Image (cartoon, rainbow, N blue to C red; front, side, top):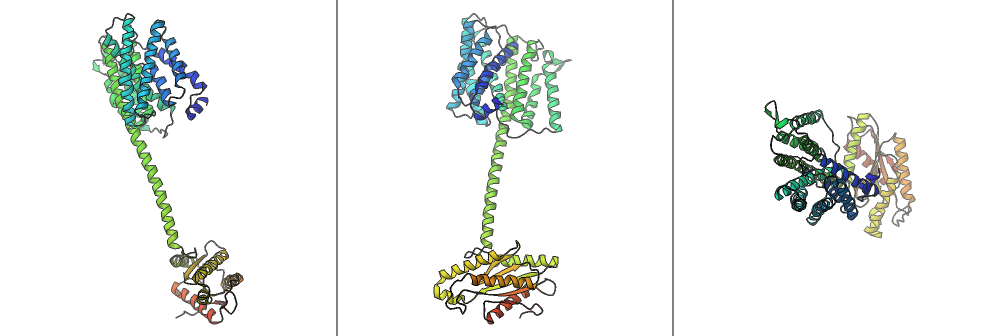
Length: 494
């Protein structure tokens, strides 16, 4: 938990600083355990990747402390193989290699996560190619100064390839397992079969004495297609793990004398092993990084598509609301009213329920406009619309501006008595607003309502329904206004 919190903060805590040199020390010992020459030449040098991965993972935070801790660990771990002076010089060469790699990656803006192909290429050139070569030249000079009989360029090449492969394989491995995994790996039966088959093939190849089994050639190159398949199916984490295990297994097999790369001199065997591991790494890890980048781009594209879709949906909702809303009063417009009336008519007809339609007109509105002006008239219409909206108690009821100073109400009625009660309340509520109207016989603004209640069926239609409600409204205005009239549904208005 403490390590996990340190990783989340992006700052190496005290537990990381304690475990890092211990882990580094263990990798040095493991690497020397797989040494295959008298000069302790190794196929792959693991420890340098530990410090480089830490510097990249924490973006150089507390770099002097981390470098000091791993330098001490490196010197102590090298004492069994070299003298004090050689251990200190060779450890300094390792530090130079790591800091050169990290500095070049910073210089050329390579992402420390190595999840894009261009970042992986920059890392490959900076570390396994340039920094490891520089370290190989320096280390060969140190080894020859202390009496090594191996030719200088042979030493330099062995060191270069060993360090370069260690950085190439184990740096992405450590970064992959210390970072967050974007997608959880879900193994199918086919995946299980691929893993099992690959492990069996690797075991057969690496355990073949002299690269043959009963006269049949089983060289490690057979594992190259498997690396590509694993990269395609399982991503960076398992691919780097596979390459790391194969490279470590190859080195251990060589120390036991199995010689999977053929019965050749030891230095040539090391070179062949390193060439194979380099090819395996480039095919496996390179392909896995490329696929990871493509998947990241696909996720980013999907995220943008989702965002764009949500924006379009919001825009469509706003446009739909604008198309269904009256710009002056903020309530439903005539178009929304027609659509709702058709839908409610069909629903009521299916269910055999009654439907109420109330047509409402503001009394003497022209005179009010002429007296107070159109701005005051608009304000009155907004107040009437707001009051009508407050009077609607059911979710399915609708208030709409039908046109000019005329409004319409659609409601689920419990009968003519309920409809008349609702209309009377509206009529009294508008008059209760006490909006002064000097040209009205009532002295205040009032409304007239015509109400129609029917059960939709084959004998009537929406057009008839509207006509009867409008006829009742006309009758209310003729009878003195500020009143409610109920439509006679037994006859059809002409």
